Image (cartoon, rainbow over the protein chains, first blue to last red):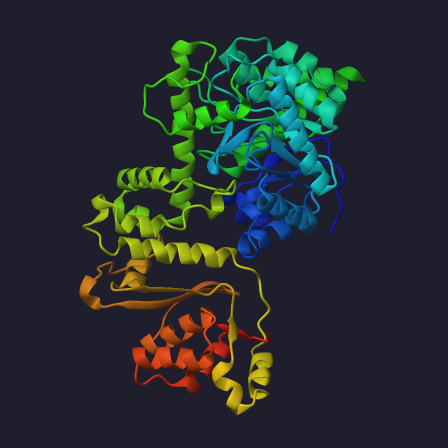
Length: 279
Length: 259
């Protein structure tokens, strides 16, 4: 297996089940792939075998959706040990999770639920990030999530909360530019001020995806092309932080693989334009 | 200020609570609280519908999407997920359907669901190298008087599904690539099925009643003698020699237990 200790600083694609056979057959020139960790928690079988073959040819990022980092339930030891096993198997270039919670009282909701941005929540989620980093013996990338409501008891702006998690735990940030945009619209804050508050050196990866605007607020469906406003915000993020490994995510109404390749090419061209200006 | 735990419990209660009710905690823009919780409710239930659609495609095809989604929603409320890994959620859907009144007209539906869950579990079972020669050699080395107490390890992907209905035929004619006659005669009889994963993929095999009882007993850690008794009460013509040779060669029997 080739070794990739860091993701290449170029655009990659989130790989989902409908495209795996095509990728294995055609070996498209994609710089790196990211998969959802839990989809490879099985003890064996064809999905894991396919991931081994992909990992042999591409840098790989493991992106978790179920660790429930912010929950006040105990960390799920089985879930964590399966992640450890998968990390040992595929030696990914990055391991990420979400700054959210997903279950309470033993009941899982299997969704990315928002934290109240309070000192209590900050202390709690930082201790959990540290637990996971200690178990994996590596840095975790922690991603900001979309939200559709805000807790009246919150005392810390979201951007300060996100920055503090990185500063306190030494984790890296997975900066989801679409989620910042969605939350800026939903909660009425300035997306650029959010970016300005983040510690740029901690940002190890960027996510881009499409939202749904047909309801009472923007919903992060990962089911549409990246919106023009989000491309513009992404360009300003890259101008501020420099190029970063950037992932195109698409999880519902998944289109042809070529559509994802075009979205990744757009992200790549934005990074290269910035490089040309910087030079 | 409510604790983080109280806020999370309140949030979960609101998501699983009734429509158009404000959450039991304070939100910015309180007038929009119920509407925003409804967005989460929609997303949460959509996740489960999608996950179980992938696990139970034949059940969904038999019932149609609206019926299936309603059944999944009821199942989620009755049997909440307990893992952050959605891939392992839904194993008791077949048991749930037994008592799900709207499905009463489809008495075979719970067994079709059990078959699909068995397939799903077999897909996720550990990879194993097959060494039938080693199993035969180990078996030959066992003294005759010890045979009744001997235990076997079956291939870890093996699952056993029995039904009073012809669920293998129902499953087969509801595959996306099925062509030709898709009629199923419900009184065509019972099925006793072995589900396992071999190097080519999932294998579904209809077993004779004796073989089924024998293997299911072995899978349940019964010693060989007790498994033979179970086989003979299911089928007086059960032939141990043929069953052993067949299922060692096929890899169903993976090892002679050594403990």
